[in-house]
Structure formats: structure tokens, C-alpha cells
Image 1: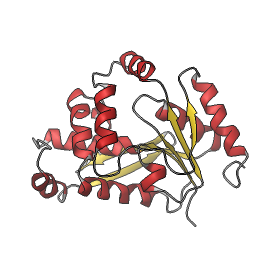
Image 2: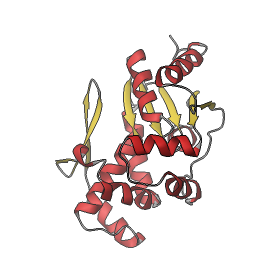
Image 3: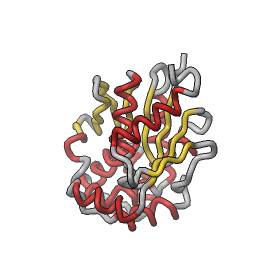
Amino acid sequence: MPGRVIAIDGPAASGKSSVSRGVASALGFLFVSSGHFYRAMAWGAVRDGIAGDHAETVEAWIRGRRLEVVESDSGVSLHLDGQDATPHLSEPAVAAMVSKLAAFPVVRDLINADLRSLAGSRDLVMEGRDIGSVVFPATPYKFYLDASPEERARRRAREGAVDSVAERDRLDSTRATAPLTIPEGAVVIDTTHLDLDGVIAAVLSRLAELSPAGK
């Protein structure tokens, strides 16, 4: 039978990944980051010299790609065309490419199909920017994490990231396909003044009110 999906959305550096990992660990669900899928494709584009500016070029390139998911207790690793993309996901060139590539519907359609296939028989905690609004709009377990732009910029700086939070927000919120938005029915949590354990506790507390995910 299909698995349960807990969708955790939000902008860059809102705490989605760390919170999702913690919630998945507490519940025994599989943690999945949709952003890793986009970054794996972005790494492939950088590897193959694809500029990411022209739809026809991207569409022709992506038709030949093969993205494989390798599961482990800690989550998933991603292999693109037989190569492990996971060690490259945080590279600056990949960070610069990912929002451009994600703007193309053909890329989003391909990745969304891969994400949905994971829920065929697994319980998932999946984080991203359109999980509750586009990928799994029917799930009753939706959360949207946010924080002030200043706090999110500080978090990215502590992580050593070089991409701009403001620019990521602009690209994610204004793209024509699946723009960043608060999913209908989502529980909104402002993480600006909460530590990681506090946000995880807030999510788990809300899930405990719901059945069957809170069991």
C-alpha cells in the first residue's frame, strides 16, 4: 500500500533539511530532500557543459539522463548516469545552476515522477519548496518552515554557502512553474528564534494530533 508522506516546505535556510532529518529519525520514516534531486541534475548539467539558459538545449540533454536512487538508513544517495552525484551537491557551480535548471517544466516533471515513485510503499519525510503544493498536494501532513531573511542569511554563511538567500528567494518565488508558496492547509512554523530541537518538537507535537502519522 502507498506510504505516508510528511511534506516540509520553505525557503532556503529555513531549517527544512535538519528538521526533516530529525522528524524522520523520530518516526522511523525515510528522509528525502527534493533539493538533492535538483542538485544532482544541476551537477550533471555543470559536468556536461550545459548552460541552463535555453529550453531546447535542456530538454534535449535531460532526455538522456538516468537518475538512480540508492537507499540507506540515513536517507538516499543519488547516482546520475552511473556516477554518484552526492559528493558534488554543495559545490558552488551546482548552487549557481540549480534554480535556473529547476525553472524548466521538463526538469520538474522528471524529478516529481521520481519523488512520487518513492512513496509507492514507503513512509517519507520529504522536504523541498513545492512538496505540499505540487508533488504531494493530497497529503494531510504539511508543514511550512520560515525564518527572517537576516537569520536565514546568517545560517547560510555559517554553512559556508556562497549563494545569495535573497536571490534564491526571488528565483524560487517568481518562476512560472511551481513557485515557492505556502501549501493549502500547511502548518506554518517561524524558526527564527527556535533551535533545532524546538522545531522538531513542534512538528512532532502537531503530528501527534493527526492519525495515523502521529502514531
